[in-house]
Image (cartoon, rainbow over all chains, first blue to last red; front, side, top):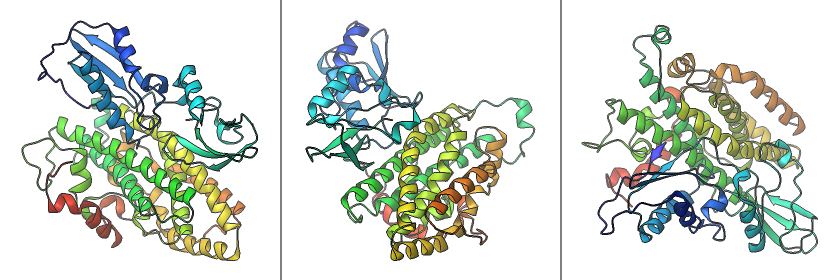
Length: 175
Length: 280
């Protein structure tokens, strides 16, 4: 585990006694910078919220080892909580258990689809996911699609094309 | 963190303290991922087609991310145990992941020789990635069971990425080997260039032996059978011959490198060497 930042006590507003539920609500308002329709709660990267006295500790887990969004996400969490009066914030990164797309919320999957990105199909523990995954085109809803490239515009996506409407699209790959 | 009982310690040579072995072992994993990530990143903007340019860059990013996790952990172990670790420009402060990547010289790098070799053509880059991913997959599979919980966690995280790398590179080896006359010829050439470096993957260094004995690291000699099986199957499908020449080149794990690593470090480390301790 890696403690990213220590307490910040320089700000004028002192922390108040905050409820865990409220922190989760605030975290649900922090968005993934690369997939801006998904909150970090939708994405399943917030693993734990702990409140001890005035200190709020948030445990997050990276999607991919090299995901450059993680540093931005940590900063955005800090900023958003500060704006809402929480000043004693600790953000901890935990690698295990490893993040999986199975943790993405149903609400998150629907939001992805509406945004034009096909949500992950199947469960990550099923190794068949790579062999014969059938992805629905988020534009015309056809299942007649094909994989163009296993790697896409960000670590978490693959590139597909619809054989019917011909439109290329991103697929949030199972992980 | 490391938890070692006295009975386990008795089997370890006195001069190889467990913490030192853990540091060297973790640096070896970090350096190998960083250097291959750096090599792959040389393709960014130069890939044969856009999709594959993006693919190799994604793989580079995964590898550099894995390297960061290993370097962060190494720095933590060094700082926590107050290990004397001599680095230029680092005084009166804790060691960071960046110091370990940017301020160690060629002789201190512990990466595999395979990963520092120049990219060559696309076929060579693909074959090197395939050899490496097949090995890394097996390595992480075992490392997940490490008694060191952080090494196990990094392996658990990384193996998902390696699964994609292995699948992608296997498919490309098959496509190029069983492709045109020219692509086949280039893959034969790639085999000629890189086979000699594959022996080192399964030849343990002293610190790997200690780490394996402590059950924090993997006994790499046990990975060879499964690796040969995978390589044989893919080469066969690619209509490429399995090399029979001995793969004798080694030394990277203990700092004896080919001339190529110095050039990589010169480029990668330039900024921190020219402007020590500079920050974003």
